[in-house]
Image 1 (cartoon, rainbow, N blue to C red):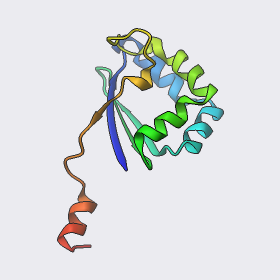
Image 2 (cartoon, rainbow, N blue to C red):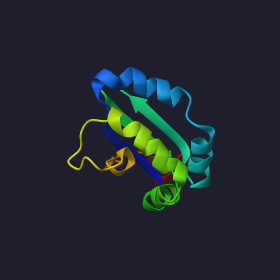
Image 3 (tube, rainbow, N blue to C red):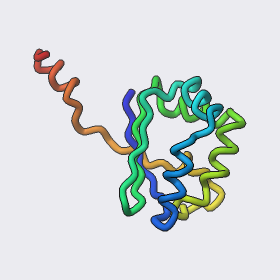
Length: 116
């Protein structure tokens, strides 16, 4: 399963967001991998638009596995102040992702067309 999601970092805090993601805690990296987050990337626009991409067995299950880890709770608490305010101020950043619909995939269309 390929998943793309968006969120929003406060524009004034983009440099801090970049700094923190340049050195993610090793235990957080391992927890993501153990929870099934594969080929996970984050992309950040100058206006604070954050787009994530992950491949996993099931996104809800992968998120649920992360929610059970102590390191994720600590990481989300550290990151919460960097995100744009959400409707629910108690919501962790990873709970506010807006999943985007996949409308095109080259490999899928090539396979359907019988091309290689």
